[in-house]
Image (cartoon, rainbow, N blue to C red; front, side, top):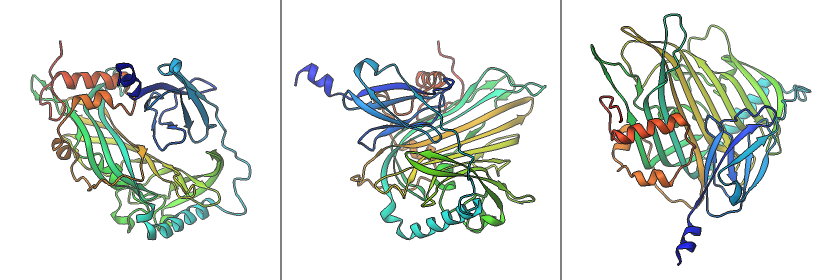
Length: 415
């Protein structure tokens, strides 16, 4: 094979950005898929994406709930400069009560549907390749409550997983390649107390399980598809929206007053005809803090969650495609007052029914990553989720200090 032929056979990268056509605002976590395949990616927090393709030209499908789906042909001339503009499809407020079906009715039907499907879990479980990114950063907080402009990363983790997905959640993780860095630091009086999660991926692999665990008293945060949700939540149909040609009903849910357990509030997007769940967003205030290595006081916690689904062979049985968590909290210790954010994203980038890999639930992500040899060349060749400028800076920092694959006990300034 000639050098030219070998070069043509190498995978190419399509890079681009997805924005709202009306105002050019970035659209984070938008689905970007190769038409005619089960491969794809999602945009990052800034609406940017990177996707490996075998050859060009290629056709991409870009979709997001509430926006018109777009198919974009990508040629060599646009491979590095693609901008996709999606047109908003406003939520319809007309006829939100459909044939007398209330929000509680839709949610009850969705729970009953999950119960029926759970009897055939094995047949509805798909082997997939997924990517997980977790990062923790903070900004110092002034005495007047405002935040300083400086942002300091204290933790960064990226993992390529083999896993299984279904309508009920993600399970059976195994690591293909992974890396992490955790930055400490010291001041004149001793160690600077740094918050980090020893197993934040547990949120992705165990917190979102459908139907949620029972009884409710055992749950750390109540979820709206709980088997006894009517006792804990109120539901209201607030509109319709279309996704991939499917009419979805948007149901708002709120926890009832005087609950002893923290609970999510947010929206469910359900198929109007089959009651299949297509998306689930929620926010909970002051959830039970756990899995934290923290000294001092935590306050004003907010946990945000978003779960999106993807239709496979049977469009009426979508499987979990993406799970996002974001935890915001104040950390007070000695004279330090910081506003922290811990953010994680897991998404499926390749569905392959012929996969035969074995997996096992990971109990401790740092220990699991330590067992896998870090291969720097793998990361240069396999971008999946586009990195923000801040991501790139912290990755360079960890690479320069040798921080990937082990803890960094002290900050080392790069020259």
